[in-house]
View 1 (cartoon, rainbow, N blue to C red):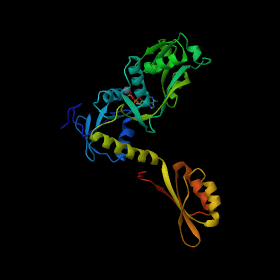
View 2: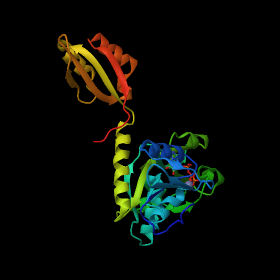
View 3: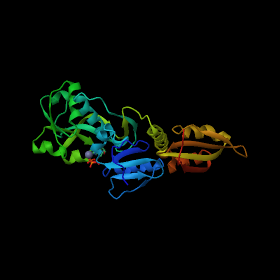
View 4: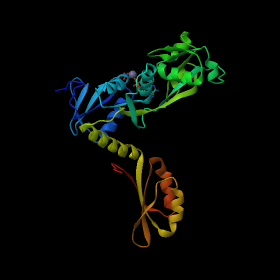
Length: 304
Ligand code: ATP
Ligand code: ZN
């Protein structure tokens, strides 16, 4: 049975994630990689945690900061853009920050940018004085304009911001950009970055004072392990001792090279590196420099 949302029972941790959209799948896989599993409920809103007392609430991303602020959820995975917008909105009406960013999660990267019609000659923020800027991020934009000492009109739109200049409802826009393809398709060009965003783990401004504290701590530790390993490989090989300097030079960008005893005057070596650092080409170079029995292994888990 689905427990009542916002109930006082606090021996389980409740995490809000996006129900569907850009962050939904990566958020679930990250939590699954942390060892969490769930029983799917039929309403697909609440997923009861099976392996640990950690439940999921599947919602719209816009609702996540509010759910944390109201204590309905304990943690949330949401874009920094959304979290900062709602924090800036609260600040404007004199409310204290109700949540904080606990970790950047390395997916959902995008930028909140000003974009102007392609034929504009951009000379800097001063040019914005008196203009109309369409955005779904009015609080972040207003705070930025204030810091720049510029008075411009913020036109709040909930979607399709990029067509506002063509429709004549605004002169330029402030919107999320990842590849820039949407801007190009609308004859706009990005000119200023207001925020570098990615998905983040958000939690309440104050920590927990019950069983949730231990659960949150365990989850964070596992998450750090997963994030640290993302894209990491373990490289192992043998080599004659005299090849060591050349091999070390080739592996300058890897982690420390660890030497283990081996036979026949050889050393066994291992190091952690980014996947990109152990391309086929790199392995062939290492082999030419004396490495034997090269092996690249995926690293599943680490606790450090
Ligand atoms: P919901 O139905 O949950 O309200 P949404 O339409 O607001 O969904 P998505 O488009 O799925 O949300 O985007 C979710 C988050 O993905 C954004 O808030 C942002 O942090 C991130 N993101 C990454 N790249 C982009 C992009 N190019 N455009 C918009 N958001 C992006
Ligand atoms: Zn949304």
